[in-house]
Amino acid sequence: MARLIRLIPGFLLRRVEGLALLFWGILLVPSVLLRRLKHSGSHPAFWRRWLHHVVTGLGEERQVWWLLLKMESRWTVVRYVLMIEWRLAYGDSWSEKISIQGKGAWRNQNNLRILVVTPGHLGDILHIIPAMTALRKGRPDAEITWLVGPWSEALALRYSVADHVITQVPALSQYQRAAGDRLPGMYEEYRQCRKIGEDRFDLLITTSNMDPWVLFLAACVQPVAWIGMNEGLDRYRCWAEKINLDYEPDVYEAASQLRIAEVLGCSGPSRLMYSVTEEERTQARNALQNHGLHHDQPFLVVAPGSGWKGKNWPSDRFAS
Image (cartoon, rainbow, N blue to C red; front, side):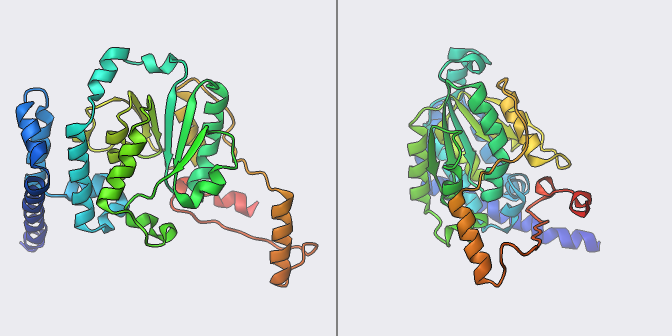
């Protein structure tokens, strides 16, 4: 009985979220509803998704998209649902692109246009470098665009793995520590992602499919194929040819992400790469001296933690 009583608030909250989402959907995107009504025969998934929204609220999105999304405001989740639905209503059809080229034809396509998306922080950049290096060497004809957060742009530009480096700030709280609380508004974010989509990429590569911003970006890019890590919501996975690689929590992050390049027949070592310039060495020596440490004195710096296990060096290696 006590357990039943504890479940009642969650049940009522989902009902309220569902009604609120329906309200915003009808208020903000009536043209989407009309368009889908007109083409309901070819887009039955639209009605199933919206029925699911109304009945279950936002609980599944918060659970599946990303752990940190549980801490986002309800408006943030609603905002991405509406933006995704709007873009899917007015974007080109993924299925049309696949049918034109043939399933899997993109793998051997010359001059493949690739968008790699890693909006995270410095560790995310370092750990995907081996995969991007293998991709650059294995597919020299491909045109690679790398989307990173502005906080990682300087690091990304150090590597000759992409033809273009662009920046974007997703409107999620996990990026506030680097964005300085300057997250884009709904219209600004929609406009930015639409602009990225105008480049007509053939292949989208992401290190996570469980982020609503990534899903919205995918809806704007409308690639022929999408390589990503982890499954997202099934009801949003009926477009583009997708290759989903399981996340391996007990495998080193760089080695795990190297599998992305292997999908395209590219291979290479999984070790991290970072070349320190002499200017940086001088700056480091000056910083040490300013804190009372001289470069000829022995000292030890240890940074054992990270966001999750896959990025951590094993404790027994620290001990060795």
